[in-house]
Length: 66
View (cartoon, rainbow, N blue to C red):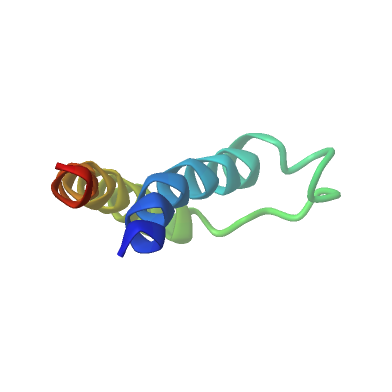
């Protein structure tokens, strides 16, 4: 359970980095590949959902240690 809660905190950070790279660094990191904009539009609400779920997982961590 602790591993899942910690994963819930790490996942939004990794997803944010991937979305940022796809949106802003296509010229140098992706060698000019244009990432489809609809995937970025879908990715932002998914990222917000992972942030919310990660925040909720903090309560699970405190319940384990409390």
